[in-house]
Image 1 (cartoon, rainbow, N blue to C red):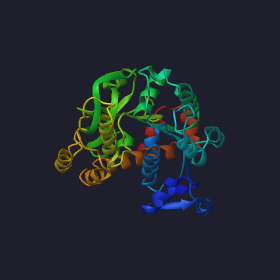
Image 2: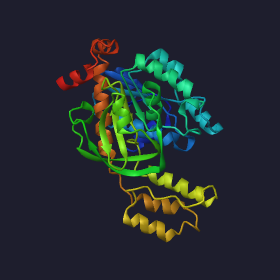
Image 3: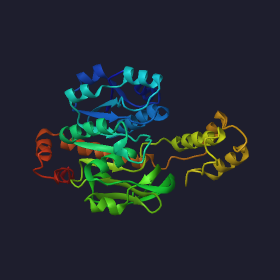
Image 4: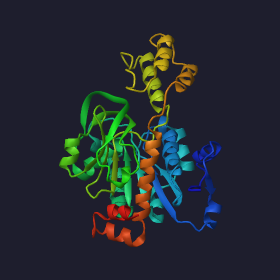
Amino acid sequence: MPLVAHSTLPTFAQLGEQGHDLLSKERAERQDIRELHIGLLNMMPDAALQATERQFIRLIGSSNRIAQFFVYPFSLPELNRSAATRDYIEQHYSRYTDLQEQGLDALIITGANVATPALDTEPFWDPLMDIVRWADKNVASILCSCLATHALLKFHHDIDRQPMPGKRWGVYSHQVHAADHPLVREVNTRFDAPHSRYNDISRTQLEAAGLRILAESTDGGVHMAVSPDQARVVYFQGHPEYDRNSLLKEYKREVRRFQSGELSAMPPFPENYFSPEALQLIDAAQLERNAFSDALEAALEQAVDNTWGDTAKAIVNNWLGLVYQLTNLDRKKQFMAGVNPEAPLDFLRQS
C-alpha cells in the first residue's frame, strides 16, 4: 500500500472513500518498506487548491508499489488567499521550514495565477526561487506543471514565455519524441494531454537551452521536457494531473464571468474536449441568457471523457521510479555532486 495517510489532510479520507489503498502512519511505521518523501508546493488559486492537491496525491498513490509514499502539501504565504483558505492551509498543510529540516526526496510544483506578464515581478517570485534553490541542492528531482514550468525555465535558463493570440485550452494529441528516455517508458507513442494557458515556451527556445523534448503536440505545443541532465527537473506545460471535469469547471467559471458582465463575449469551447452530446446540452441550455446550473454541469460531466489519465499515471510512475533510483544514497551523492550527469539514465537502463 504505497500512500501513507500521515496527517489530517482531507484528501486522504476522500481517496480512501473512493477505494484507494492507504496506510495509516502507525501501520507504515511497522512496515519494513523503503519510504519516499515528496513535497507538493501547491500554488493554485483557492478555487482549485484542494482539487489540485487531490489530483497529484492520487497520481502518486496510483503508482507501482515500490515504496511507501509520504506526500506533504505546502504553499506560499505571499499568494493571495481568502481567510478560509488560509485557515485550511494552516490546519492541514506542512510548513516549508519543517520540510527543509526533515528533508525531501522529490518536489512537485503546481501552476498558479499571475497578475503581470513578467513572472519575476510577482510577489511569490523570490520565496519560490528560494525553495527552488534549496531543492536544486537537496532533492533528487523536481516535477513542474504549467506556470511552474515557465517560472523555473526563466530562473534556470533565462527563457521568457511568449504570449499567444488567445488561450490554448483543450485536450491535444501529443507524440513522444524521445522513446528511449526512462520517463516515457511503456507510454503510448501518441497520447492526449490537457492544456490551459495564455503563454508558451517553444521547442526552439527549449532546445537552444539544451533541454530535451519528450512529448509535443502540433496544436498544443511542447508538453513535456527535461533539464539538460535528463532528470533533475521535469517540465510540463500542460496539466497531466487534471480530472475528467477540470476543463468543464474552467469553462463554467468563464461562462459565469460572461454572465456577470466581466467578459464581453461567451468563451470559446475547450478544443477537442466536449463530445457532440455535450455540445447539444450546452446549445439547449442557451447560456447567453440562462444561468449555468449545477444540473447542467452534472449532465455535462457524464458527456465528457478522460483520455489522458492512464498516460499521466504511467509518466508519474516512471518519475517516481527515477526518484527511487536517485535516492539510493551512493547514487544520489554521485549525481548531486555532478560526477556523472547521465547517472539517472544509466541507473534506469540497468534496472
